Length: 190
Image 1 (cartoon, rainbow, N blue to C red):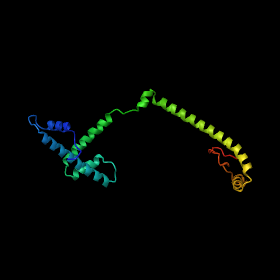
Image 2 (cartoon, rainbow, N blue to C red):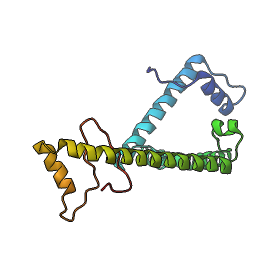
Image 3 (cartoon, helix red, strand yellow):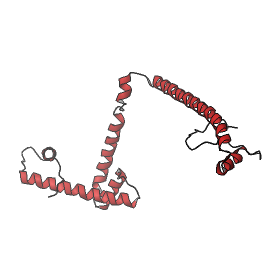
Image 4 (tube, rainbow, N blue to C red):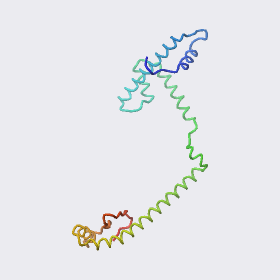
């Protein structure tokens, strides 16, 4: 017997519902029925998995179970499976939707939360623009001093002359020293 099993109380309850009240079952017969049920479930599940893989799917769905039952010769169970699927679907649809506990704890409506989110996004955008403007004004002043101080070296003068050449192409990237970090800005730097 494998580690997989069904709850004994559940199997006993199902057997009591099916059998007449005057019939009693021994523990051995109940255990045997449990083993048979587990084996049946393994058989159907493995066949449904094969059907699922043949369909190039990764999740077994009710269609795969129906096909598995038909392939195994249990066509009589397909109608019961369809009824169970309808009952399950109806129960799921009638169940109230779960809402986030965080939202409930705040006591705010969806409109209020959306308004607050829009305000936070706007504040963040304003802060980012201010940071970019500060960075671009700092970089343009340090860029001009950097360009004049590094024009004596050949590698830096080549890069600064290419960015400041008057060949009709204007560069949007400022020249920097190795220790500076410049964020891209929305306006080109002359």
